[in-house]
Image (cartoon, rainbow, N blue to C red; front, side, top):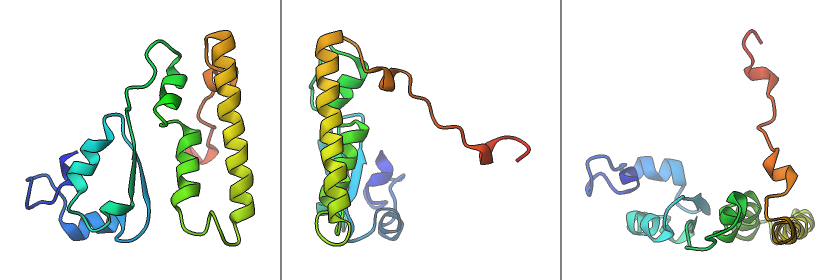
Length: 144
């Protein structure tokens, strides 16, 4: 975490040039953090692109619920992060990709509604969430 600070503020911090190379000076950055979002904002508030950092993190939502629902309630799930990208990335709300982005956003809102209903009815995450695995990538197999 301390690398987010400037190297003038912390010995493990990144120089401005290195930070800008990773996070850019003018593009949106969607940051998914397992802790409180304000910490990321505090560590980066002097950086060039701070206003474009959209931090999703723990919001103290979801106490007695399922593991994935806890992530959904804190808007750290895959659906909310893609919705954030649609909202903040230039050209996705308007422009040539607008219709595709609109359809994807509607699909994601539908998945969130489906998730909420399933968790409330069954008290567990949907099977597609429980049984999800990383897709097998043939290129990473030994000998390929």
